[in-house]
Structure formats: C-alpha cells, structure tokens
Image (cartoon, rainbow, N blue to C red; front, side):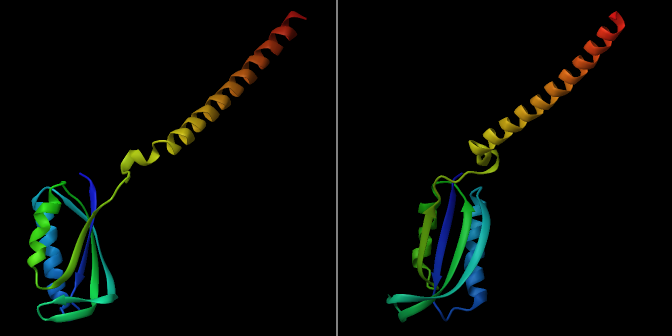
Length: 145
C-alpha cells in the first residue's frame, strides 16, 4: 500500500471537536478499507492568499490539518464524499513517491556499510590466524636447533 498525505483546510469558525470528528471519520474510513493512519498533525491557522467562497460567505483563513496514511490506491475515489462536507474549505490527497520503509532504507548505502563491516571482521580474523601461525613456526624452529 502506498503512503498518502491528506491535507484538510477547515473553516476558521469550526470548533475543535467538529474538526476531530471529521478527522476520526476519515481515519475510520481508511482503516475500514485495510489502511493505516500513521500520523495526524494540526498545522494551525493559515492565512489564505485569496478568499474561498462557500455558501456562508468568503473565508480568508482556515485551520490546516495533515493526515498521513497508508491506503489502497482507490482511496482517492472513496474520499470524494468530502466535497460535500460543510466544515471543509478544501481538501487534497497527495501520494508520496520514492518513500522507502523498513529494510528498503538500507538498500544501497546500508549494504555498502554492512559489507565494509564484514571485510573488517575478516581482516581481524586473518590477523589473528597469522599471529598464531608465526608462533607455531617459531616454536618449531627452536625445537630443531
């Protein structure tokens, strides 16, 4: 499942409880479709460059929220019910590209570092073996004299 960021721009006069209600509803929708909400951030009040016209007037500022999630690609079509939501000025769903998780993070750089570590440990083992061989060789020379 690819990771997504969903940005919500709420009307400025909406109560925090109503904002959380909508965010929880979207989160339940995502988890109901076998998705996972990974992070929710409140980015505060944003001043807009122009007024967004809605039925109850123009808004020149809004409360901005970000929800990060991992969901199926159909989530874009499923969230279109947000267009009819009165509390929202705008919403945007963005798919994150080239994001690596888990062991994929170590793909190129990590493998090189791990291979260097194994080479160093092999050199240490060889040095220990060489020292042991030298002592045995010296003992054999002393016995033959």
